[in-house]
Image 1 (cartoon, rainbow, N blue to C red):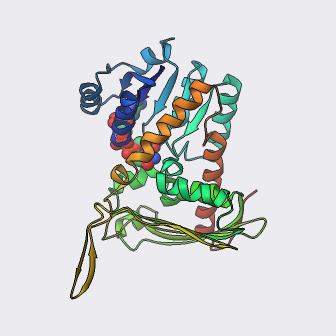
Image 2 (image 1 turned 90 degrees about the vertical axis):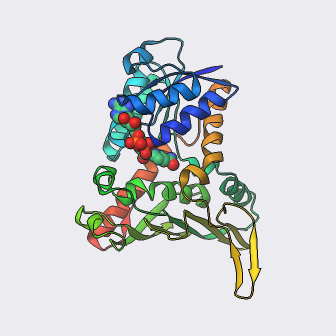
Image 3 (image 1 turned 120 degrees about the vertical axis):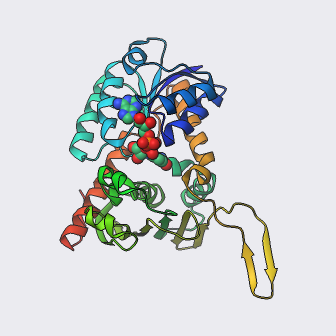
Length: 329
Ligand SMILES: NC(=O)c1ccc[n+]([C@@H]2O[C@H](COP(=O)([O-])OP(=O)(O)OC[C@H]3O[C@@H](n4cnc5c(N)ncnc54)[C@H](O)[C@@H]3O)[C@@H](O)[C@H]2O)c1
């Protein structure tokens, strides 16, 4: 039984806390959050106690810490958990600064603890199956990956202001997915972006609509399209085109019911947002973390994957600001 403490009982913490508590191989050892409402609700739902960060870090019976707090607290909590000898699962992104991530990864290495990053989309049953077929060569040599990722609506501007911008907050998932599917690291990044959904996002210095092109050393290309708005729900699609054909994974709808009438076909809406669309992915990633701990294996995706995705996000931001392609080393 792997004993896991949860830091942060907000949107994502509520999911992870319930998944840890529901796992037959894990125990939710405690929940820490300065805001009592979320922590108490999760405690009531799971039976786990609300405890302080210091208490949880000092408890030798706890094996691991799951960090689901705001992004600007992640690196400090990873450092503290690693120093306390705990394995760490940390939500994306690791930090908003690549330099800070490098320092934290050095501390994690020195402490010798496992670190997994919450790139949940790798564990989505559809995208995981797509990647396995890519790796098995079903599409032949990969030539072009296309990733479409649109949120149903923008978050509040107060969130945008602390988020690090669309590339580091939202597209970070797609950068990780691009690496996962390309099987190679991109070396060149070009981006375009606009604030078309909400002018307040533009005033806050961010974009809400962006397209990014990535190229690997061998010439493979990936195109990523992001929007903070989609009138039809959470739009999450991927295509991998290769020498033998096309692999694609489409949206997941609320039901599979279709209506056919005089004006054509109507399907139910696509699932509304990440909590619904990636419910299975969140369960699967926690099980993968527990599995790695039980077997004494390195979890994946790890801190190095977190850093690589961040470097692509930094390059995309730089390309947006300069209007030029940016090389990534
Ligand atoms: N992988 C995903 O799909 C996904 C989805 C949503 C959020 N996230 C990431 O998860 C993180 C949290 O996002 P969220 O949407 O759940 O935010 P949120 O604001 O809903 O929740 C954050 C929680 O952390 C608590 N908190 C703040 N400081 C704390 C501290 N010092 N110690 C303990 N708890 C503290 C807050 O009180 C809040 O309850 C972000 O880094 C975000 O990028 C990932």
